[in-house]
Image (tube, rainbow, N blue to C red; front, side, top):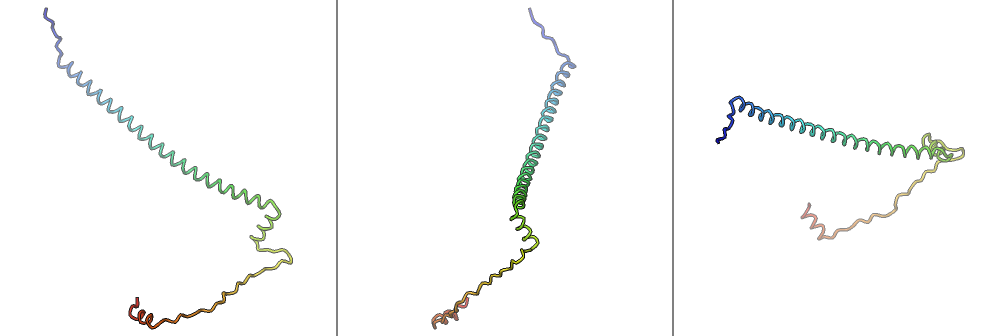
Length: 129
């Protein structure tokens, strides 16, 4: 016996084509949304990395300042350090102390002038540069 194929109607064929186009559009939209999300995530990661680098630089600066303050505090906790800070800041001295000025003498040496030979004088006269 002969088998009959079911004929598709024009409406069913259009519905199948529209379903395929709609599927392609939905897949394209999903790919666009996923790509946009990945791009936004990259932007947030780079922003976070920049903020971290800035925070680490600020932390190292603060640690340096902390060490300086710590050494200043330890220096000022002793009598000698406190005395040195007061002398430096206010320019005071203990009673009976004086100021010593060190004056260096100029180097004593005689300057010897060279006498040029006749050939050197001629050479310098011809070639001035």
